[in-house]
Amino acid sequence: MNKSTLENVNARKHAGKIALVTGGSSGIGLAAAMRFAQEGAKVFITGRRQAELDAAVEQIGHGAVAIRADIASAADLDRMFSTVQAAHQRLDILFANAGGGEFSPLGAITEEQFDKYFDINVKGTLFTVQKALPLMKPGSAIVLTGSITSIQGVPAFGVYAATKAALRSFARTWASDLKGRDIRVNVVAPGVVVTPAYKTELKMSDEQIEGYRQHVSDTTPLGRVGEADEIAKAVSFLASDDASYITGIELFVDGGMAQV
View 1 (cartoon, rainbow, N blue to C red):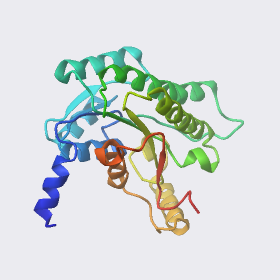
View 2 (view 1 turned 45 degrees about the vertical axis):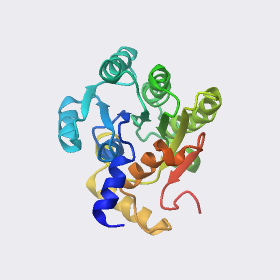
View 3 (view 1 turned 90 degrees about the horizontal axis):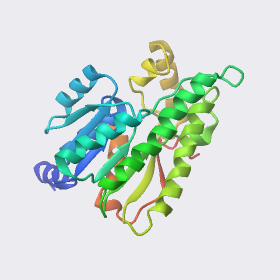
View 4 (view 1 turned 135 degrees about the vertical axis):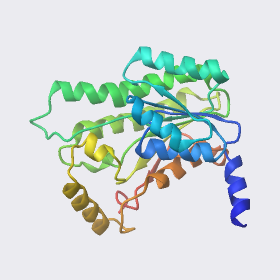
């Protein structure tokens, strides 16, 4: 298969589908939005910062649409789905990716930190999915962003890890709740992928990021950190008809880091 033929096949993978990516203005969300668009989908992205959304839409191309929204806000979620409904009356793919976290060891965790990240990562994802369902028809797919931290016990990252473990549990329950509707729900669990959030959310310096990158490279079977598009490829697969008999799983895309 030559390059042009492969490009044509890829362009048909999600042809005619409507996809929504929350947290789609940077990192893994942006990479997934770009891949969905390249594979034929009409893409909506959400985020909290308008300037970043505008830049992302420019980068994605293919008529992508940005909706400024915070998934922790019920009003924002209602407006988000009203926008999709007004434009297309349906949603075929939901990549519930928006989330965040910060380091705080046991003994220093505050109620504010706990509430912030459970509101975004757990409550926000729950109501994102619940409010999306009326737009989703048989054959639709939901992908949640999990994390290898949910099974690793990373020091000072307990709140974030617990939120991601909750999403894994949700996926199991929702796969059962959606029985008979032919709507699949799966989790993609990325390994280490250096994104802008390492600075904006985790407050890591360039030196700290580089040291962590080297540590992961030394201890991961594939000998390197991942790239955002490698996660996006897995998300695209789980959202595609190629995964039509897959639901309720957690797919680790981590270079083997949490597997050995």
